[in-house]
Length: 560
Image (cartoon, helix red, strand yellow):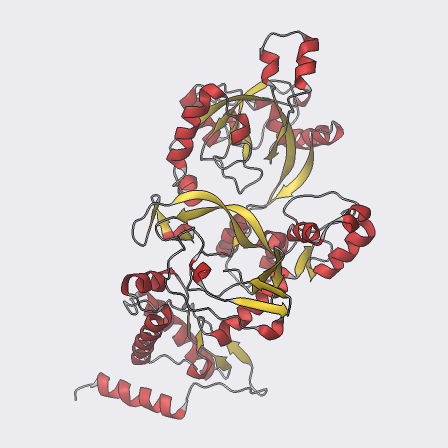
């Protein structure tokens, strides 16, 4: 007898749909179980083999748990905002909402044919206002919050302003972009705009300048996985690293909570270790390296040098290191290409070569820079002073140093770090071994054990003893501080595109002000084109009369 799978499948799929077999109602008599799939992006191509590959496995598990007596919630939805729909709209002139709706219809037909046990009454479509109303609500909660390290939780910004009123910035133990210092009197004397700018330094959702993957042809910022070999995956357009003001989420404040929370999650140890590496906790010291003034090289008298130095301010470079014991082995410094120090350090005779190098590496993403072991770099012409021994360290620029980790500047210890070693060998820079008996003739000695040599007051100590003593020296001599750092970075939340939920923010006298909750959702306006404006503003800059009037005499425009 022939097995007519097409007829059998259709019969039972029709039955499940008509009888709402997989619809879930609250039932206190049965234990709850939630199975959530990653929502697909509804592209015009329809489902690909990777979708059912994952969905079949989770559907099998959902059915298994139902048979075990659990009340299983297994919903489906569509991650429906994004650049592809917008680019298609630009090419065809169709509104992204129209093409997205058509694509969702096709996806639904394909998913139904596969016979998954979804509760379609709980379908989620992220581009619909009744959904993104709640993402806007969440954004406002984060905008109105700061992170308190003592309580290990988000707290209302109103508590922070009350602290400023009473004590200024004194006694704070909170997440912040940079450490600020001001008194209660100075806070009270500030204008409303100045106070707003101070609070932006602490908000969980905040505006800040950061390096992004900017694609001028697409008129948008791209995620790392949207860029390959310096080109956009979609369209193959040139992408460059560019500093831009973006909305960001201060997820780095939660690094320690995420680490400790891993112990409570029922995951494999290998997966937990991946997460630990992603968070990247490291304990070390942040040390100040003074930049040598060029006046010391001019052969002028000490008195004249002093008088000239009064007119030429000097600055310090902050360097984070997990191995303070290796300070005596530092033979050069390296800055990330995006470092704020770069323009301050370029000597006139190095200007052309530095600018050529920066232009060469600006199209590389951080992921590519981490993976690529090729040695590249350029000398700035400037020198820093090692605070442990007074040695002059030439300051280089290289894209193997990332702006987002630590301070974007490193002291290079080539004898005991493989990338520093490769750099030193390539540019013929000194290599000073610090561990007794180690051989650095062919490669670096990266082991964190042994007896210290060539290290002045650390000589004869074990590595662990030397790390502790070096930290004490840094604190006692006021050249830095002991601190904990994380690789985890704040999430960039902005996009310069049209097809995405608008931020529920309007501007009142230049101050970013959240929309009242009762005014949500803030829906996308109609625009004549989905391209950036001629002046470089995002597509929402084309919106006409898109304003929010808080009062009769108080209006502003919405932020894209």
